[in-house]
Length: 212
Image (cartoon, rainbow, N blue to C red; front, side):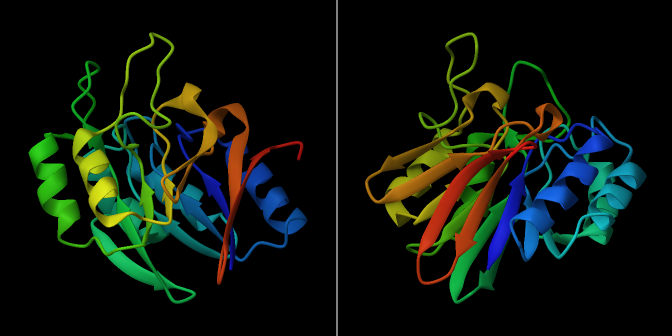
C-alpha cells in the first residue's frame, strides 16, 4: 500500500487540497498524519480536516493537539495513538504527543510515561508512526539542540523497527538510514512538505513537496 505522509499541519486549510492532489498524482491508497493537526485546537477543525483527506487515513495527535481535541480527531480518522495495527502484514505502532519541551505545549509527557506506554505495543521490526522523533535522529532544531525523545530512542535500539516516521521538528526534514532502520521526517505540511511511503514486501520512502 502507498501512503502520503504529512505532519505539522497547524490548522492550514490549504494542506487538505494539495494532499488530495498528491494522493491522485502518486496513486496512493491512504494518508498517514503524524500530529500537530490543529494549532492548540479546535478539535472540530481537525475532525473536518481529517475527514476531507482521501483513502484510508491513520493519525496520531501532536504536542499542539490538546487532549480535549483528541476525541474529535479520532472521529475524523483512525487513531493509532498508543495502538498497534497491521498494514500489508506489517506491524505498525502509533504514538502521538511529545516529550517535555520548553514551549509547555498541551500534549507533552515525561520520558518515563512515553517508555511505559509505547513499550507495551512495540514489536521487533515494526513500523513506527510517531509525532516525536527518537533522540539524535531527525531532531536537530535551528538552535542546534536535540528535540527528540530518549525513551523512543531506547525502544528503537531494542526493537529495531524497519521504518520510523516522525515530525515535530519542522526544520529536521530528511531521510536517514541507520543500523537497518529508515527514519523519515516529511517536513511541516504547513510549509508544503510531505512524504511518500510504500508498505509491502519492501519498504520505500521518498520526500515530496506540493510541486512534486
